[in-house]
Image (cartoon, rainbow, N blue to C red; front, side, top):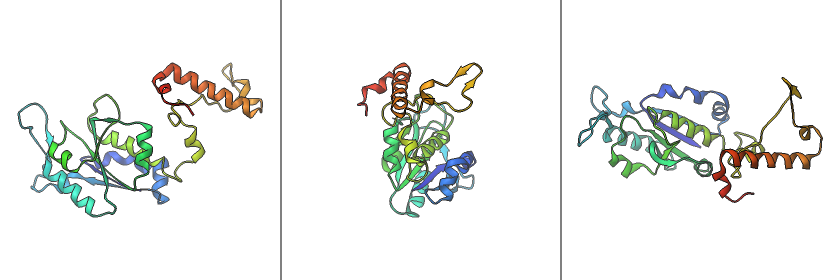
Length: 227
């Protein structure tokens, strides 16, 4: 998989050079390139924003630098990229969509900023607008990192397939509680069923706990068919 990210703040993406995402890049499972939007501005001040038509507060990302970046970066790689804009106005990101995106060979992510992006760029170049939650952040960089992390970990070879199979949301359920040594911690003991050696009983316990936790915390997930 190849991922291009267009941003005003490339330095914010340092977390992608650590942990599992770093290992995936070193192993050749994904290639992530960060592009500075100002490099595609045409004036000496590298201006990429301007005041909105119709008045109002804030600034809007100009169409010329952003469209130039999309065209130049898009022409440098094959196949054609699926272009995503991170914005509070986008569709709410969920696990099923992440699984679909993880199967695409190439993504281009535009980090929204200020009051937004000139709508003409969105209409012409953007295939999908994505939001990571019903709240507003100072820019699209953090949502872009969330998106990249969530997509890359689903790529074959990045994380053990069995681990992914049992994660929250994979089967419309939250994960069950987990325990490790010591068996007793500050007077609290690990549930005895987990140490009994009866694998069928352990599976029943885990499924019951997953159902209980989902019902308590995210009951709307149970509207989806259970496995």
